[in-house]
Length: 108
Length: 111
Image (cartoon, rainbow over all chains, first blue to last red; front, side, top):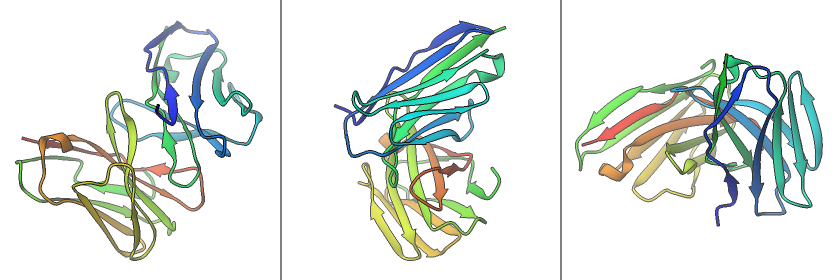
């Protein structure tokens, strides 16, 4: 079992839709949870991070962590074509462990 | 990417040859990392450094070595390249436990 599991997609949605991206993790000791966005042929960039359980909102993006079920979510409201990218969840802090990434396509 | 550069951006090499990839940062961050990214596997940690001359192995370190003689430079060497090492290699830096800044990557093809 991988330490971080993520559905690779692809996920295709119309512009304006609400997108839900999810991951599960196995190690209950993890405290930091991150989402990275990666455009084609670019390096990943940090989108959001949360510490422990709870929600964090930044504009159209909301990150959610449920430590009781070891579940990480990223919600994108009013999705735009510019959101088309691969989204990677990550956890573990130092020596971060990444999910395989979910490819998202937002159609205009 | 601002503050971190990788070289070369692309490289084709022959099986059995040594290859060195370079990561250079201008952020003075303590931690530096080398990851490889492959379809279906995501990003996997090869080696990391927590200071000058302080390095340790990651998940997929076999066939790779690293060196960090200066804060700003972290070198990854494939001692004898194999086709299984064809991949995209990313360097990352961080000051603390989370929030990496990644370079633009090096596409390496071993033929």
